[in-house]
Amino acid sequence: MANIKSAQKRVRSDKKKNLRNRMVKTGVKTAVKKYTVVLERDLQAAPAALISASSALDRAVSKGVLHKNTASRKKSRMAKALNKARA
Image 1 (cartoon, helix red, strand yellow):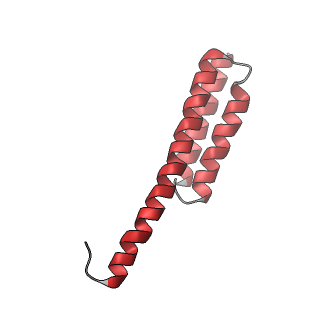
Image 2: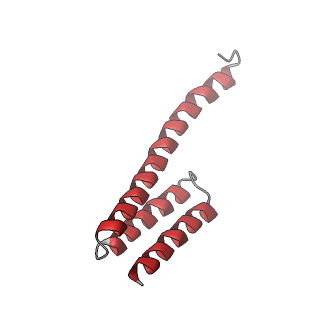
Image 3: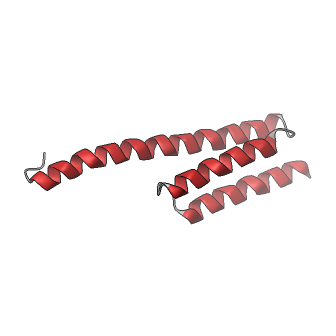
């Protein structure tokens, strides 16, 4: 454990931030997995799942959990998979 008071506070605040970041990342992973499942089973519902997964990625970017290029890459790959499944 840290001895300096500011370092102790940093440890406490880092725990809170880590918890929030993990929750946001978990939500993103869940949304992306739901999209992949819907894409495999029901092609009609896939665009709606793509929109919800994209918005989850955008929320993670706005909170600073993911880098904007990471979210953009993931959204691009999901859209590419949808277009490939349609063809």
